[in-house]
Image 1 (tube, rainbow, N blue to C red):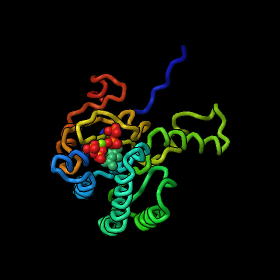
Image 2 (spheres, rainbow, N blue to C red):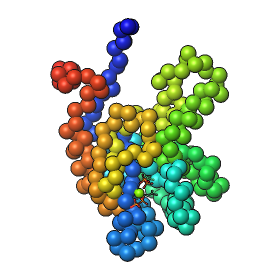
Image 3 (cartoon, helix red, strand yellow):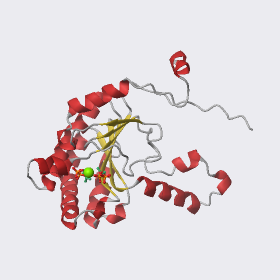
Image 4 (cartoon, protein in one colour):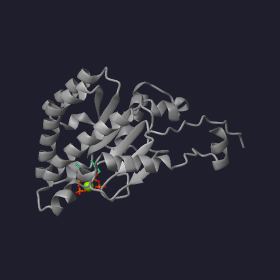
Length: 248
Ligand code: IPE
Ligand code: IPE
Ligand code: MG
């Protein structure tokens, strides 16, 4: 049996560099108030505004949120249409403010599923904010973790990479957010404890945090609770607890 070479261990940090969030529970938030589901989505956009600001203030450098999964097309046509309108309005109204605050905006996912108008708004917003470095805010839209791995594989094959040359690093370089640190902290609101095809590859060693809070109720204080929980975690990356302590 061959000896495995020693792998470099990623560094842990006090403030997560990258937070990934599944913003779930908008529909239930609205239902409890006898309101249409879209009212929950609207309120969800407000919650997101607060969380973006809080992340920038706390020195988080990357925030990636799941806004619409490749599976969400299965929802009733009316809800999908309203979500698209909301997405478009948010792109039209929020991007200038992000830019003023030094925030870079990106979208990951299969954009060909969206209208021309939305695709143009996305491209313009990405171009406008490209030089911003305070916080990179990424929206996963028509995104699926499996889609991401498949599109990365296709890029490798199109580049003529031979099977011997395919390794984890080569594949990782072709993923949607290859240039970012992997998420340190994953948050899912809404009580469900699953990944729902979000960043499958990138979450391999992320600390997971689940809360019953519904997304429209998730405020900066709730974010701080999640970060406090993250701080209590011992990130071993395969090592023993003793090794972690003697290294720090
Ligand atoms: C998350 O909230 C937003 C999207 C998936 C677009 P939901 O709409 O899934 O809300 P619940 O889970 O039905 O409460
Ligand atoms: C996951 O939420 C996707 C988003 C928040 C955009 P869902 O509400 O679609 O997830 P499932 O279907 O309950 O797993
Ligand atoms: Mg849901």
